[in-house]
Image 1 (cartoon, rainbow, N blue to C red):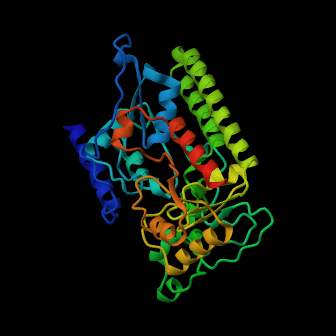
Image 2 (cartoon, one colour):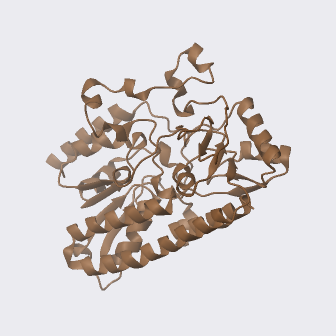
Image 3 (cartoon, rainbow, N blue to C red):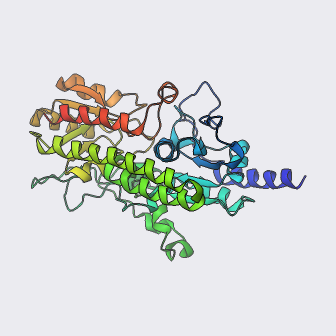
Length: 382
C-alpha cells in the first residue's frame, strides 16, 4: 500500500510539471512508446547479479552495450522510432527508474522533465550520469567568433552576415514585435530564478546548450571513458571485462575520428548545408567545418522562413555544393525545396539520437551510423 501511495505521488508530481507539454511531435511506434527495450542476457549470467542500467536514448545505450555486453541488464527508456524531444514517461517508466542502479541521460533543458521525477524517487541511491557533464558543451546559435547567423563552425576566414541570429526553439517567449524581428536574440539567463542563477550547475539547463554531444567521435571517446569508470565503480567484479571492452571500442572510435579528419583534410570545400534541423554542432566544430541550416539547433519546428530557404538555395548555387543534408525521421520538406531549386543530391546525416525500430532490431550501432555519415560527408565535401 505504501508503494502504491508513493507511485501515486510521483505520478501526480510529473503530471503537474508536464501537463502543458507538447506531445504532437511524437513519432508513432507500433509498440507502446513507454515500453523499455531490453537486450537479453546470456543464460550463463545470473540475472539477479546484473547491474540494472537505464539509458534515455540510443547513444549512451549503445556505448554501455559495447562496454558491458551482457554483464548488465540494459534498457532504453525512449522506444526506437520515438521522437526524443517530445517524450513523456509513464508510471511503468518511473517504477523502472526506482528499481535501477544506474541512470544515464543527456541532460540539458530537454531532460528538464526528469528533475521532479528523480527528486521524487524512493530510490535516492540511484547513480545518475548526464552526458553534458562529461564533455565541454557548446551553445546553440553561437557564432564562435564568426558573424553568420544560421551558420555554424569555422568559416576559414570568410565573413558572413545573415540575419537570422536567434534560436528558433524559443519563439514562444517573444512578444509580437520581437517575433517579427529576425535579429531578435533571447537571453535565457533571465528565465532562471535567483536560486537557479546562483547554481553553478544551472548552465546545463539553459536553452542555449547544444545537447547532442555524442555527434563528435572525440566526445564519444570521452563519454565511453567516463561511463567505463562508472561501471567499474558500481561493479568492480567485472572491471577487467569492462575496461578491455572499452579499450577495444575506443580504438574503433579513434579510427573513426582519424577517418573524419582525413576526409576533411582532403576535401575541396568545408561548407555543408542542412535543409533541416541541426544537431551536428559538435561534429562541425571538431573538424573545422562550416554549416548552414534551416534551423538553429534541434527544436520541433518543421517550417523555415522564405528568407532562410532562399539563403540556403543561394548558398548551394553560389558554392556549387553537391549535397543537401536532412536528418533522421525528417519530413525532408525543406530539403526537397532546396533540391528542386538547385539539383543538389539529398543525403541523410544521422545524429544517432534515436534509431528506427527496424534498425534497433537489426542491431545497428553508433559506429554503423557514423561510418555512414562519413561517406555521406565525403560526397558533400567533394
